[in-house]
Image (cartoon, rainbow, N blue to C red; front, side):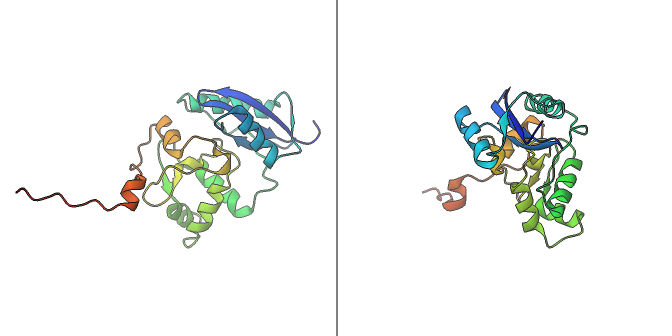
Length: 192
């Protein structure tokens, strides 16, 4: 194979995409609202990739992603990743995220402390936000303090961390709604 390839594949949440090189998986794109938007996102980020039959490594990743999105517990340990464009710190964050057991979560601060960089919670958050290996590297298990679960990386499509964690059986503290954040709740009125 010359350059990078990509493929679109079916899952229970919609049509996902995977991009790979001769070294390994470069990125996973979760489904956007429409398949054309998923393809557009792939072309924006990886314009050099050409649609083709998945490599053996990409096929192994696809099988695991399909199983995970059906609520299963896949093993991604044999999937090779192309980390050529990933910084050393981000690689450490992704390795740590892979060590978090299914159904459990950690905060950005906990990950930073575990990596020996206790003041680097913001850097951990940035690494998680840039995770190109959605689901293979389970960044959905790393949350803001307070277990806010509605954000994902640009590769996240329309699915939230909350939904991914629910598939794994995790139940983080429910996130506050917009109304709970912006509007104070009035105290109950005294009976008259």
